[in-house]
Amino acid sequence: LLKKENCYSNINAEKLLKIDFLGDDEYLKNNLKEHVDINIIENIEVPYINEQKQSEEKTLVVSNLCLTNLLYVSQGKKNFIVEYLLNGGNVYLIEEGLEYKKYTSPKNLLKLYDEYTNKIKSFGVKIIKRDEITNILKNKENVHIKGVITENKLRELNIKNKRIVLKNNSQITSLAQDYIKQNNIEVYYERGQ
Image (cartoon, rainbow, N blue to C red):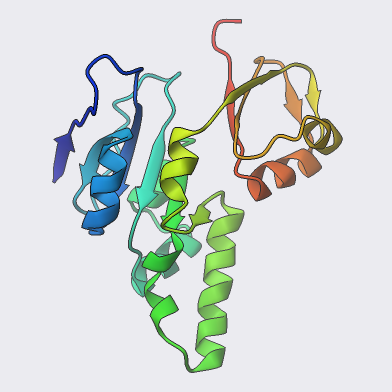
């Protein structure tokens, strides 16, 4: 079941980023409430419903991921996280919330879980340390770019941990896509242009 919690630290503040939050890390949840508008997702099996306007950013923060759900996501099996990715949303997974990280052996099994983690990263899931997520969510700066987006152009502009806004006819090279994934860059297209 879905439960919505709206938290504004200042009524006159600028419009807060809306995020969905999945997991039971109360400390992180309360910390994020000071900076973003949170929609709490109680169950990973709940169907994804996009209630946001198409132009709005869709962001999911997952504070805990058990071994079963790590496997399901890595295999692309349908659940809330996979549907979020399929609908163009940004998914942040808290590294300390990966269940397998609390184990130290057997090494070969942990290596397999690392492979699952790398697989979901290749789908666009960003794995972030718990103490970094608030800064990532609240400090995104929009950068408008036209034309063909290349890795060199992104490097020259020193774009990291930002949001790039592109014209609808802009194209992104495959090397630029890799750079985008590695540097926590979000990509949005302008509407109606």
